[in-house]
Image 1 (cartoon, rainbow, N blue to C red):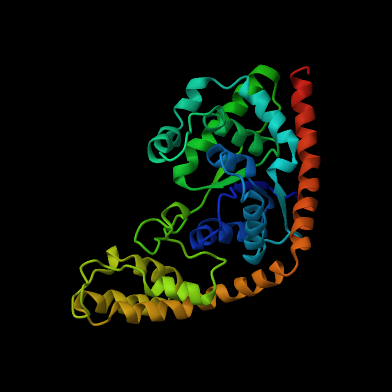
Image 2 (cartoon, rainbow, N blue to C red):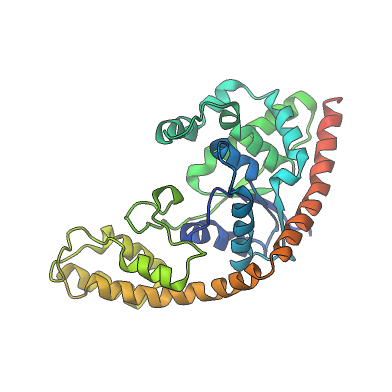
Amino acid sequence: MAKKRVLSGMQPSGLLHLGNLMGALENWRKLQDEYECYYFIADWHALTTQYADTSKMRTYVHEMVIDWLAAGLDPEKCVLFQQSQLPEHAVLHVLFSMITPLPWLERVPTYKEKLEQIDDRDLYTYGFLGYPVLQAADILIYKADYVPVGVDQLPHLELTREIGRRFNAFYGDVLPEPQPLLTQYPKLLGTDGRKMSKSYNNCLYLSDTPEEITKKVMAMITDPARVRRQDPGNPDICPLYTLDQIFAPKEWCAHVKRECPKAGIGCVDDKRELLKHLLEYLRPLQERRQALIADPKKVAEIIAAGSAKARVIAKETLARVQDAMKL
């Protein structure tokens, strides 16, 4: 039997960090062994908020694909492609925009949230408002069976499904309804205790050297109540402990959980132990990364080959859409 198809994408809006690895790439790597996976570089999506400065776009695209490959995505098992190399996405986006009611877009949960949170640039643009329409085109043009999402992303996928249903109601049963493939993303906190994010400058980047990672981890804030070594702490509110639970052995986590509240272990001790396991976990990735940096043509060839393969399906779907619309 043919494998079910999975589609997901990522914006090249900066260098990838540990949160991207654990929250998405590790899951993508596992899915490629079970499904027919299409993973795309969402560079048009990046323009919805980064349109004023595209000077680093090509660099971020190249670096992101290096990180994808270093994390274990295999071009022999999945299709890696670049959104902007497939004009079919843009055409389907235009066609969908003709039938998508404006209130559908205005009620998207993250629309107003981002307008309020991002105050250093003008987001009152058609592209930002219409982001979910382009997203629907990205998904439906490949007739994806599943889209891996967290619970908080379900409203976005449901809008894609609504757009597909509305299209089918007008023009016939052309587009399938993609189903969510619910995934549990571990919550990674950054060096300042907030969610790991490029905008907070609190990340452990996949491109960081072991020395840079060591420096950042040793400077991480921990439980603010632990001013001195003899002060008791609370692992449950400590950003460092969230990393322990992912990368350190269970025995060490139990040790920290038991000893920290009675000051039986210091934060520096915990940081040194964490670094042993974190650096070892990242070592194979960083070795693969160095090999890919030395062969930039290989990365470009993988993107080109994947885009050509994806375009076969995109052209076929768009032809069926245009035929149904009598265009």
